[in-house]
Image (cartoon, rainbow, N blue to C red; front, top):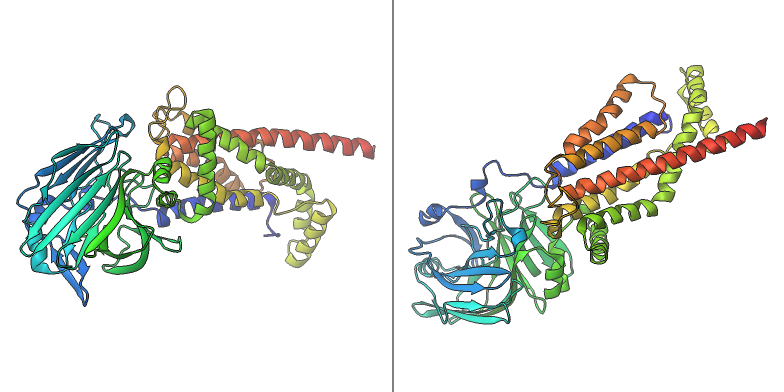
Length: 523
């Protein structure tokens, strides 16, 4: 690296950042399925017994097919100002609608979180004949409708399977939380599920599948397509099926779950929790809103998972949330966060910018050395080091600040992508939703323009025309890259560029002033 010129080091640092971004997008984040219909199984597939899920018995793994469902009649309706849920005759949460306007779809209909495939609170028995019977025998409920807007309400469901009686007692809360108690009269082996992850926010940005929280607070993220049937875990206290913004989960903290991960025909991750004769747990269905999850239990906030840079992203979101509570607008909170980060990193970026100016001043002398010792790399390197030492210049000073900011950028990237708090959040004028792309592409264009301006202000000494062309095209490439990104993320990058431009102008003037002073002193 020491043998490389200044412009090559900057080019390498920039390309590493760009390559890392692409690699992160490709290898870590799940891609949109080619055919979204493959993400869930149709009712016809279920009724034709083509959907099988591997569920283990005490002694061996056994393939269990759903028996034909003769009816999908709604048994109980649960109402709240936040949501409306349906329980069908098989004792499952068959529908879960979000009532708040910010969660409405483009056609102004309510968002519905339960898929047509595996549904929350579905029970699968290890005994195949008993399992088949359970899918043709309806539950009976003690009430047909409850309203939990003001206080929790309890509904009791009962299913008679010959000599086996299944009783589900479910207490619903207005937040989307529920407590469930299951009693199986003769201790038949069974598994209960969180259901397939919601499939509302299927995109190329975030992981879809399952998240398991272990008793030691570690997390296992199991993406759709990467799960082997019958993967077993015996120390789980939170089992969550999630997409980008929404989750269906079961949790218990006074003990642990025995969890079996399975897959459906489309290789989607499915969670099955080993039941007991008297099974007690709590659950939640709804948006992955930090404040709601924390109000239920602080530990549930782990369901909002930020990937490799969680250790930076979590405190970053907490600080962003603090700023929002103080400012009252998520857009301005992002602006404030960006400025504060730039201020904190100013000593580092200042040294990097100063180093770039010093290296630009040394460029003629460096070129002389390269010409003089063209055939002797060892002598060239020795004299280059002497030159750097004499003028107190750091050859790594220009690229280190860029490289050290990569983890911060990706932490913010994950925060702004995963924060459902930004959904429906306005900033100013045309930005009515920070969670989606800028409808008029203003922010991406401004981001690209400020990046180009920053390039113009940054000292460089290009000798290779190809390197110069690549650098000139980077703002255009980044602009196109950011066009489809959420406005909140593009806003961060735009403000970050504006701060860089201001800092670069300041450093350039400071360096020029010092240079003039040194020239006057020599005279």
